[in-house]
Amino acid sequence: MDSFEPVDRTVDRRAFLARAAALAAAGTVGTAIALPGTATAHGPATLTPGGHGNAGKPNPALDRPDAYRRPRPEALADPSELTIAEAAWLIRAGKLSPEQLVEAYLARIGSHDGTYQAFNLVLADAALATARAATRRSHTGALHGIPLAIKDNYYTAGVPTTANSYLFQDFVPPFDATAVARLKASGAIVLGKTQMGPLATTRATTPAGVITTVNAWTPTNPDTDPGGSSTGTATAVAGRMATAGTGTQTGGSITAPSNAQNLTGIKPTMGRVSLNGIIPLSYTRDHPGPLARDAKDAAIMLTAMAGEDPADPRSQGLPAVPRLIEAATPVYAGRRVKLRWKTRIGVLPGYATGTSATALARQAFLAELAAISGATLVDVPLPDEWDLLGGNTFNNIRLPERSEPFMPYLRTDLRGFGVAVTSWLQGALLGGNEFITGQRAKLLFLERVLDQLFDACDVVVQTSPVPFDILGLPEIAFPIGFSSAGVPIGTILGGLPYAEDRLLSVVAAYQEVTDWHWRRPADPPAPAAGARAARGTVAAAEPDESRGRLTADQVAELTQ
Image (cartoon, rainbow, N blue to C red; front, side, top):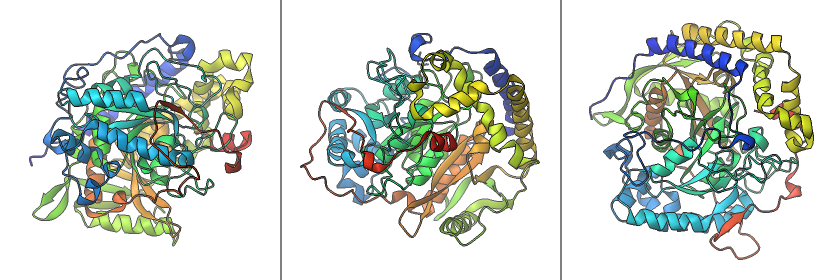
């Protein structure tokens, strides 16, 4: 297979720094944000030809040979085990219908979601109707007939979008978020809306703080962190109740649940995916992205979701979306896997130090990477004042961006924010001088990361998503092992702006020589009552107080 060259990252560094400065300025002068009170301000997405097309039309970026994978023998017996690429291969070959795939997931939802509590709402009848229609339509690409779990802060036309909050509990948007519209235009099926941290703050709870969603790997132990705030999507995918799904990240909300539940999740570069039609948390920090089972599936999802959107200025004027699916396709030299591009992998001080399960997994991960042709491990220093500029003081500069669009609600009834109210109040009380100083510090931090860190490497390991969340740089989370208790261990790689292809290429090579991403959790204990496939429109189960409750203080400490 002929490879392709990644774009010139030198130009991107300077351009991205300039964009970050402009974005910070936009955040200070105010920009229309789609809250329920102004839900029709931007209107439905306008899909561009070629990249995203119209519903029912082939999408060339998704209908390419390397977007399909012949299924593993062990996956053929159970459609819910298939990856997107495997299911797409079977659907294209006429060996599996979208209706059969949806039925398989509805059966698992009926059997297990009473325990997992991954979904806010299951759209069983609508998903089946869409699947039947997909069977009659021309094939549109690798997402044709693929059932997805959608985080409940993404607008879904005619379907409640609550962000798991009191404020939006009765909100039914009139149009789809741009990312949802693009997934549907590519042939995907919305299976349901998933549980999340209230207003995208912590792990999934009710607005009052009662824990809902559990980690699919420890379904009887609600104390095991399932990751947040895209908790429900992660549990739905890990528990084989959806093929893949969407999340959002402001402070680790894609990478954390992916790492916690053995998934591969991408937080793309700021602006790579439109935020139009997604209930906001921070204008300069929100990132929509996919949670999937492996790098190939994440690339397929991101290919469909990404691209310029007239309704979101953050998405405009960016470099073209790279050939992500090709980047996520492993390449070989003879019979040995090699990296698609020679890549310097930066290792931060202390990343794999110690004897804990995480440290040992990281050591093994680095050894596996070093053995892949084309990979060079490079010890890199932390940029100047890394701990200060990436620490809580400057990280909290995001809070006024959170409070500003919600000020009408803050002035009328604080009870609407439930247990998550503290951070909104903190943002409202932060001074203008502090906010402006924080924006300047962010640009200094970005310049140092681009010049001091990435001069020595092409991608870098991360011990926390926060620094790259502050800066809007892309990250990918993926599994590298398990603890002695059987809980997944993951890691994160960070990259240069718009370099999602480079990150995917490294992870694809690593996953070709390891099998962590193929492992699935055991099903939870059978419920007392007989289970059956979900039908109709199924709302979330009543919260179980025995799972515990997060207090306002805990939410303030854990908030994204």
